[in-house]
Length: 324
Image (spheres, rainbow, N blue to C red):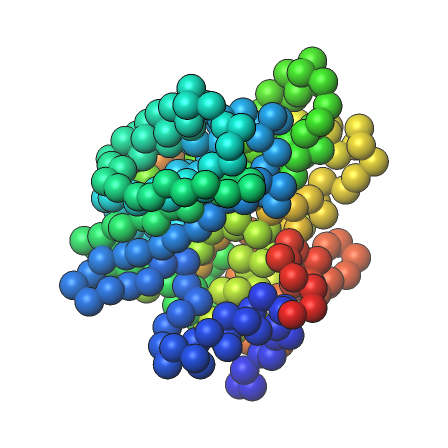
């Protein structure tokens, strides 16, 4: 079988360069795996790039800053333990606002049995929240992006496109946001799928693959296929999309399926597992995953519709840079 070839985005090329500069070929997964079985991840939320403060509010912002980092731990089936938080604060931020932000951030961490243990404060022109999470590899194993094999079932948690629908409501009236509570909540207060990841890791151990869909479903599928050197085909009719997402997309003249694949910030899990394991688990009422496709030996990642087979395009997903 010839390994599929995937064109890299500017961001991925930079990651490959950093791998070369560091001499560490393992850079690129959702977390670093340290000797002794610890997981470490870091992420930053930057005002103007990831959020507009007056739109999201400090309470939601604090929760989201913790949640998006905890999602990286979930993406490898791990257990979060400690958070380190660094804040860059502009001069116009009041202490009451910082208290709101940090109280919510700490509350999110504690919801998932983790604690804020330190960090740093500095002044700057815009609000920046840097979070580092330290966790443990799950006692049943660890899943990475590179564990998919031909014949595996492709599964996901939750639904897709809701956060993108919520983004459409940013800047709209409060009444408009309250009209669509599900998608607005999904955008401003995402839920890391830690419990779901633990259920998968218990079923599969190290046999399978997993990541989160922070940059969209298409990005997650392509990243897994690329890391595992396999192909993937998913069925359009099987992609879970919430009815409210469909309603918002139609109201704003957009395609909900397009939002599902390329909208980003859903923080759902995307993974693969052996067919035999899935057949013994899929009908269980406590199973939080939905089947959407199969891993195959094709030369890419494809969306199957009734009429045709469409190649997914990574360049349509969110990119920090288009030319670097």
